[in-house]
Image 1 (cartoon, rainbow, N blue to C red):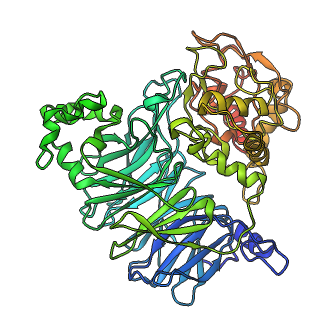
Image 2: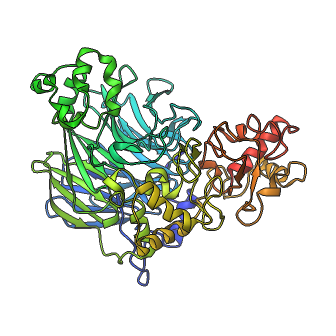
Length: 636
């Protein structure tokens, strides 16, 4: 694989040909949506990817002005600098490329192929480490030649990536779990990849319910990784939100030398959630960790130096913790228990007071809405925060933990109803005590978190797998049992029974408009050019064959007849044996499958979980037929 200027990357060529990212005299101003931020090594400029404007903004760090906007062929996400500051690397997600931008001239010098849908990026020596979000891969690209050095498979929607200073280890966060939803310990893993010789991947599972792993930072000595994520309490019925009953938000510490999970602490306060932790940035001495809390429009500062002392049972300087003064919170003294026996570290994942009583965390609001990427300036006096929905970067004075100035990326229209709905969908301040947002269970633009939830719409004790909202307005009824007549009914019920808020008509209409706007993204399992592979064409024939009867129920423009059937998957506690027929669009990204998430793969759906041939006559198919049918389904 070689570096190229755009001619060999057809998706980039097509995008550039129609002016994506280039605008024009008559083109309407795009929304501004800063995602990734990175200071140049000398601190002179800040690079900011603009997801919806398809550009990288270059900001003068001293004056705070945008000095250049570099067009990209697709929405920008991750961004990183070369060690010498001469090159800037920006991910072009939908284009499948990384753009190499020359510092100073701010022009795209080359583009490197980077999988199907790259997202996160880190520089490790002479390699660019890039997460291919759609195909579940980590790519190691030679920064000099653009050639692909290594590919690491087996990840689940990998999101962020960081490297140890020596470049020997990469730490990857996975957005979704690789476990059946019926697993009581269902959770995501942090993937540690060793590049000393052939790549070796170690997956470190986090506590049950840990999903949406996004930001990651590695300590300067390469000993620790810090990962931020949500921690859902999916084993409990959603009868209340108080004290993190349904959802909490967390920081996990990973021991990189031992390749193990050390501890998980909650970022929330007993009376207020810290919804949607997103970005993570660590000080050069490894003592202070900064976290963006996207759902509540705040940043958090965590004293990780003090945290490590307490995790090791050292209360020096915090002797008050040994006196059980946190009893005023009505909680056990977890730190004292950890000091007495390290096995009690696991209790921290359920202690909403631990970071607060120890004086380890401080949270402050930013000026903008929806903070995502964050970065510390080289002198560590400034924290740059990408406020996604406000189209600006907030410069936070780290000494005061207060916004010093806000820098808009450019002109933008006022939010229309769809954009307003997207903002509400991701905003946890619409939730009682700010524990979660709609996007907590429906991340990735209204898709699914891979967990089962015991909602109250069909009684208590029969959890169902989260469904994608894609085409939910076209495929009524809603929910696995069809208990909501339409998407609109379900949306209001979500506000009332999950966010515990009565929405205004305007708020509800905006969210409905956003859900209606969702469109499927191209499948990464199609052939180059977007057509079906030969095996998928064979699978399509099988799917539409009267012998398999797959198309009896999955038909029409949305591949569903909108009816409910007994497909032989009723569980012990299910109140009905008939379940709604879902659309199959984007089924490649909606696992685990079936109403209870009991099938980890599509092969499981067609074989192990189809013993009675009730959802397709597949028992007579050969292994190759099953593989062909799966490949067709993955192409949808």
